[in-house]
Image 1 (cartoon, rainbow, N blue to C red):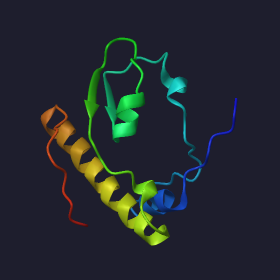
Image 2: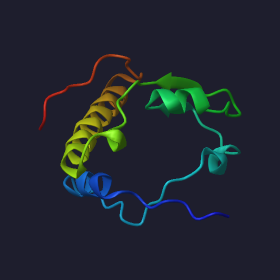
Image 3: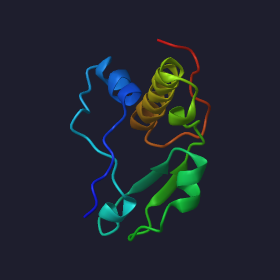
Length: 112
């Protein structure tokens, strides 16, 4: 199995700020999950939506068109983008847990 890329610095730093240590995480291929059943499959960027395979068990597929923070300018711009996207994802999942559905509404754009 080919070695996958480790998480990048802005992503690690942005998560450590809120108490999440992802230093031992790695990028994974969707192929690692094809045989697992899911209730929901959530894609976060347009490229992922286009490339997302069909999962067994017909899970509900949700798409949130979020910007890719990894393609933003320099390291400080990427860190700011990772923070913004991290918060938008958190808001959407908190709403899902609160109302039992995944909203397609707009996430907040304001920093914490």
